[in-house]
Length: 408
Image (tube, rainbow, N blue to C red; front, side, top):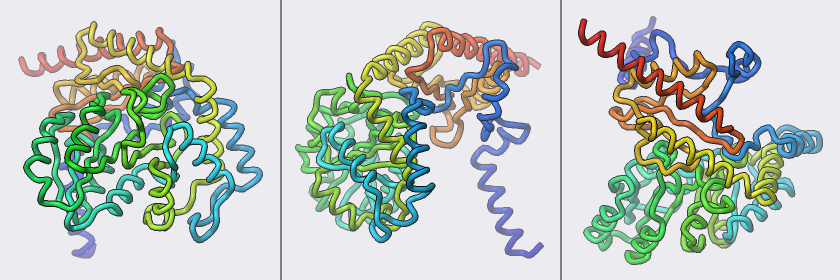
């Protein structure tokens, strides 16, 4: 083996071990072919149950979303073929974006091939060397990568501690030309939310801009699923840039930006993640648009989702399980004392046909391992009870095993 190749492999192995490779060397619950689990559902007495997919409104297999995708493929083929700027677009792109903007109460929407890319690309376009970007310390990795990758100065504030944010702005706002605050609407790892009224007050007081990632809150928060602004009764036009995704409530894939109409028109010509990326495939646009139609027509799906989420959270807490700061809206984590206990519980769930992989090392603090449970409007009370009882029993078994090993 060449020295360069050996050096590269050694480097990759070292980095992998630092990321927690030891936890998965004897088998792990990741990258499971879930279609196979669905096909083999009858091997478990109560069948296969996924708690790991963010199909919040239960639209991923809805006849309208799947039917629309099939029609679009038959008419337009499987791909957009090029960047929309240089290769043209389909009528469906603009029609969907207009309808989505109308639903969200914003001036315009621009859809992009990747939700992750959306945050990275937008932050990079907005800021320069004389600017400051301030990020909630637990914001999604796409925000962190985008914020750290620009020439602007980077700072974080304590999670959801808006007085800490205000302190930083009081001390440093005068040093910079522009300031961008980045946070999430519904946090994807903790299931808690930002105090938007106070955040908007701070933003306006310091003449700052706000990027609000609503990936997990559109279709979830508010009486009709219009997100954090509807939840708090705030005008969405007060948020400079909102980021959404089509892979959660809209049961498809890709991301989008919601903003003032003139801002969106600027982004169409200048946003690298849009200009230099292929457009959304016709089937993706069609399925997401169909999902939007169902959401508009059946807001009771949001109500059912909320009821299921609150039931999961309250029952988990009644059982003595640690749900952290979750408020009971679609995402509810259960935290464990050690990564080993977390993995043990996830594997025990899988043995009973419940798919809910552990989150350790990557994406969360190393001392806060967890299993995230994504709640759907289609989950039943019996399924929720089944999951939580299984977690309780597996957690007890894991702790008993740990105590026995310590005694030996």
